Image (cartoon, rainbow, N blue to C red; front, side, top):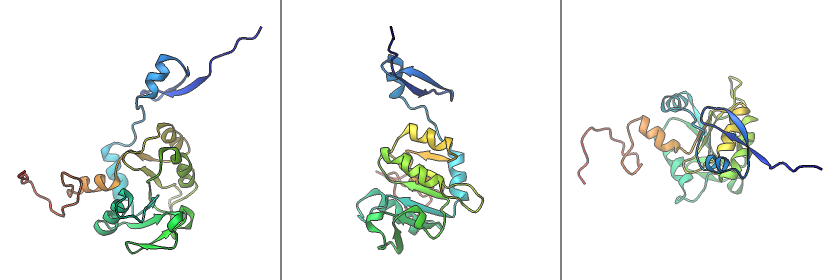
Length: 199
């Protein structure tokens, strides 16, 4: 007589350990709704931004109403980064004075940071593309997954294959916050002041 075992899921715990739990167990269901992956601290994110010279936006949209276009505009106009756009559907077009490329491997250089504006389910494939690239020092670019996009399993896996991952954070907001130009609504005012805004 054979007994059927219940399928298990590898569950990442807050202490960094991984354990296999029965898929249907109450603990597995509870943990699947909680975030355990932390990512780099604010100081580490600042260090990432300071060390970078070039940034690629994967999933860049040519539609000015989309968040990726807004972020691209900020990076081109308000920073010293060399900025590259990746969108296979717009390859060859010029947006914000920059050529749009079909893939990361088509870029004229390996970027220091790859910002992903893709669905959460697409992040593992983006991570594989980023891991295949090498900067001058032999390391892959940092994978920066944009605000509102969360795939915890993909983040853990990306770290296992050697990537530094920032996830569910807007690179524009982080850059502006660290450089003193973040307005209440997230717009770069171009002014640094301690004066309280009158509402």
